[in-house]
Image (cartoon, rainbow, N blue to C red; front, side):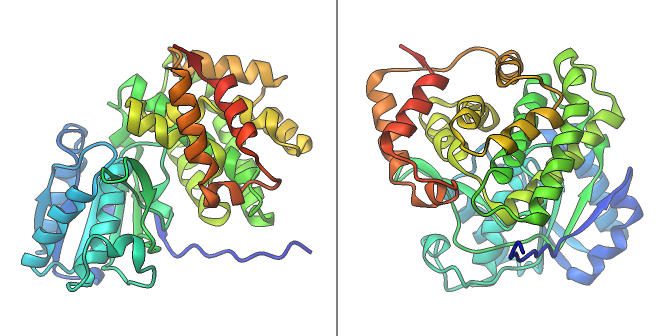
Length: 367
C-alpha cells in the first residue's frame, strides 16, 4: 500500500471571465484588500481592470501595489507589508506571474502578525496568514495552488522559500489573460511547469495521487509541444498550458521539487537566467542520472518523445542559447547545491557532490 497524505484546500475556478462571473466569492474574505502585482503585464492583459471593476461592484475597498520585480526580494515584501498594516487590510490578492503571488503570500504572513519581522519568514514556520486570492496570468509556477513562496535574499545571494505554508483560499484561472504573453515568457514558464511535473514524478516523496496528476499533466504538456515550437498558441492551447501549470503546482505541493530547481537558483541569482530556463537546462541530464528508468521512459512516452536525446533536442530548441559558466562558477554552484539538504532529500537515492558537478557539466557550456 502506498502510504500518502493529500491536502489541497484551494478552490480553483477555471473559466473565461472567471473574475466577473464569480466575484461574489470575494465578499466572504473581507471588506479591505490589497492587490499585489507587477508594473505592466496585469494592466496590459486586462486582468487588473477586471479585478478592480469586480471589487468596485462589491464595494470592497482596495489598494494596489504594482512594483513587484521578477524574483521578488525580501525588501519588496517589507514594502507591501508596511502598506497592508497601515491600511488594516483584511485579505490580499496576488495578480500576475509567480513573483507577485509569492510576494503576496509572504506579505500575508507578516500583515497577519504585526509583531513579526522579515526574518520570521524563515524562522517561524507556524505563523498564520491573511486570506489570499491568486490570479495567475502566466502558465508556469502553479503558485496559485501551492503553499510555497520563493523570495530573493540579497544578504545570502540566493533564492529560498519562506517557512510558512500559505495556500491561496481561491484561484481564478482565465486563459484570456495569457493571450498577449510574449513567446520567450510563454516558453520559460511552460518549461517551469514541465520541471515541476518531472521533478515531482521522480521525487522520493511521490505517491499514488501525485503520480496520477503528474501523468495527466505530462500528457497535456505533450499535446502542446508542437504549438510551443511553432509559436501557434491559440486560446485553447494557452488554457491547456494554464491547466497543466496548475496540475504541476498540485504535484509539487505533494511531492516537492528536486535537483534541477535547486541547481537553477544559482543561475537565476548570479547570471540572470529566467527561472524556467535555469531549471529546464538540467532536465535531460537529471533524467539520465535518475535510477528509475521505468518512470523516465513513461515521461518520454507521455510527452511523445522516442528517446531522451529527442527530448533534449526539444529543450535546446525551446530554451535557445546555451548558458556558459567558468570553472570557478561551476565548482562554486555545485558546492552550494551539495549543501542544499532539502533538495537532495527529495531525490530517491544518494547524491554526491561529484554527481551534482557532473550534471552541471553535462548541462552547461564552459567559458
